[in-house]
Length: 428
Image (cartoon, rainbow, N blue to C red; front, side):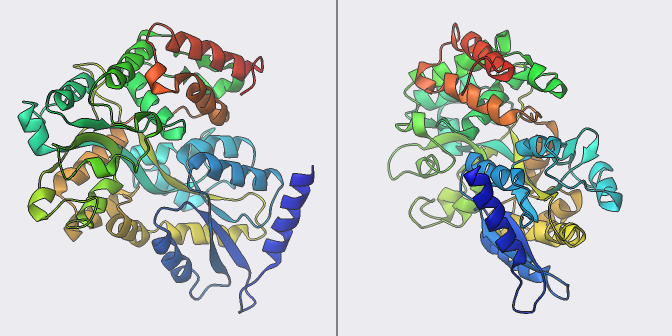
């Protein structure tokens, strides 16, 4: 109760603040990616308006971002006008009544084909639109061309996790993944399970009565892949605490053949900006050795299910300026903003129009942009459930550490625990 009271008080103090002009301030809570571009568009989208947009920084991890926003919204904080949301939290927030519905022409544009199909799907709940896609993220397989060639791996054809692990192992290379005990590890597990034709849970519209499906052939195949990497020489030294950033430096080491790495779209812009600098390719010639391919398949002959991520802009249901917040959301998700986020920060667009402009800029190879778009539309979203945070935490608690994953026990144990958590029989 004390926490809620403090949050309610802080919310009222924030909402009472105005800029020097006396205009109301719309608080935009953002994740740490692309902050400079966010600040630029906060200023641009405030020009000539009856409001000003102020950028408020959220914590680095998606889990901590959710916690902060959920606490504010549960306290009906009127100062939470706009917020950057990991797509998996849209269903939870919408179901709780914390997000304003997006209606009219903007909603029709989102559902009518102007947006990538995979991006549009992330903002739907109960057949209504509750957020605006800003960027649409996905993972691809990044690799050193010389490493793949030395291992005899034909990267013009779909490759499997088994093939990638064996290729890296045979040549003294490594495989970079995200296997720390956090959300991105669930992203990997979910894509492995879906790539084997299964799901972590189904019938999510039933809420706590969703059907848990981890104890399945697909769950066991996912566990086999994790176990194989953990037991191989291709596992990186920090495997059990690895995240999106830790494996970046393994692509262009001072010694050794480099790596295969599954990671998000920011990777290309990251390495392009590090040519000749620590952590990046030594020169332009080495940068040309960077390759990319579709996310590895869990099962040979079956299409992979690349992860889908990104950021959606939600409008707080308790904002004192809902019309202004909706107008601001449309501005900060404009084609121009999406193009700038792609070129400046490597965060790829959610609309087809913005993708076309990014392609015309010449900043990215055409085949890479095509790979991104295909991966978003054909990828595998995480379960869309108002109880997703519990689902994710329950999976993490059993599947971590990845070095202890066992196909004979982990899927069954995690399915039982997740079912108990959803039913209220066990606590996280």
